[in-house]
Image (cartoon, rainbow, N blue to C red; front, side, top):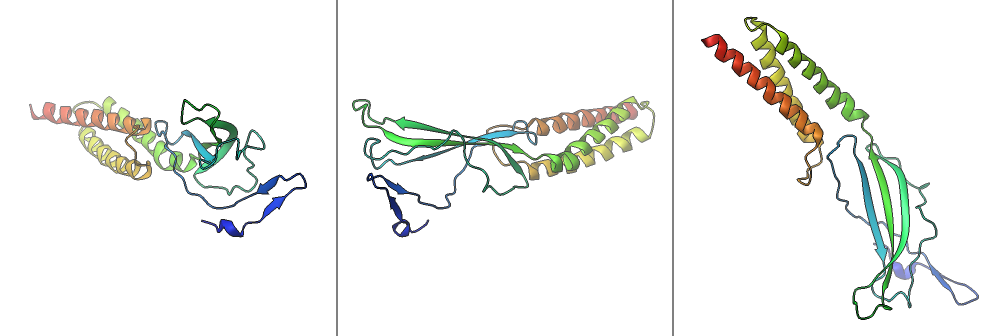
Length: 200
């Protein structure tokens, strides 16, 4: 936290005080990873002064969006939009004139998905094609079982990779995690069916 006592206050000729406290504040944002890695997130940041009513101290925004020219590029997220809106929070219904002013900044983020497409999505699609080829092989072909087991092992590795790369949350299960699990179950069923048929 910065030393706020050392930040200068600008005094205008009309008695208006202008104070720009700076600082680095850390916050969290709940994310919805249903469409991971093609997800977009909205993170609201609320900045307000809850020690004074809005008639004593007012916090306002200068524009309807945030100034982003000082933003650093991030390898995982792209800021595709921002918002800024002023609001008043009334905590006590009996005193409607006594509200607290705050500004809600909104960050609209889009995940950069090239890494995930090249390393997870495309290999999973290729393995899915191999599974379909395995379904079309004749039941008496000896390669069907070896192909099925090889693809099962590869899918196991990819499920572990997906689990390592997906943010840990239980609020939503990504669609990308569901598809390999379904394909894995189909391939396992097909391999077991082939083994049962060959034993009779």
